[in-house]
Length: 355
Image 1 (spheres, rainbow, N blue to C red):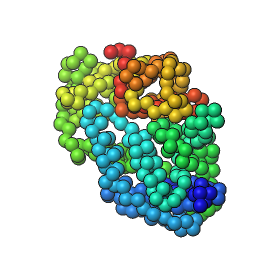
Image 2: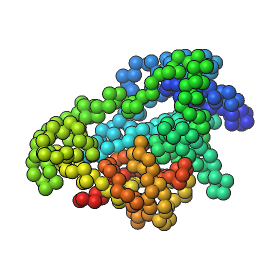
Image 3: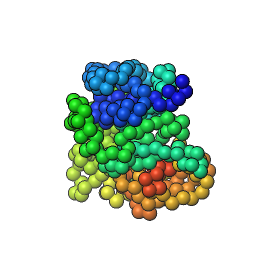
Image 4: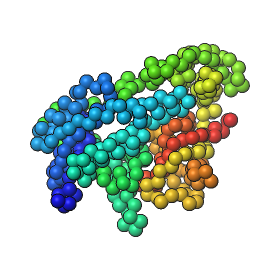
């Protein structure tokens, strides 16, 4: 019984090519499999679940839908909106992976008597023989690597996670799906947050919480124009400001309480020192002293050399070798040693050099 459970997995099925390929590869590896699609949005038309069910039928494995829309609203969408209204730019995918996807999928796996959860994420796991800790590594395909978005996973979650695509290139995944006759083999990858498909964060938030127009200020506090609502602007933004100031200006700060957006030259966006809160350590038990790492403060950024140091209050201070542009509170900072994820946390504050 236990041996049978150890070779079993719940497959997180989105209806896309990656999760479909992950299901096939897990089945081929000799696992007893069941597919599951999480219904996260009340307005979900059901197409993703239908596509996922079709793949499961083709593979001959059972399929279920987990209705988590209410919990997703409470655990992910609500905090996302509140963070934006507080002037932060959160990364809901990081929170969703830990609090929703892996937490709830593992519960569903337990209920079904299944040991692992397999997903279509591009990342790799392993275990350190000396420390016994579960490790997270970058995917082989650097362009598709999703380790950044998995930086908040716990040791328990990593110990039960399987990422069959971690050692593959994207073209190999599509080729496999075509060979298997999957209808989604050439489906375009989504780049948007799932609950804001058009990427218009401002309209999404204002539909829930009106954000009035206000003043654009220069760095001396002088009014230089009017904006359409502070939630519509992000740190480092240049386009769409509608300001004629004789030189390019960028959003370099917001005061949500006052309803103002501060603009300035691009030089005002650069910071070498960053404070990170709520660190989650993966390869390490914790940070006991200064450590040289490579760090990234946004998902598509290349890792940058830096030193991290623990603060007395539990936060982590990053000092980059070179100033970084538009380091944004609310986003995740992730620490690497080569392809190994050491840990990560949430950016609390960036100390711009021009401040």
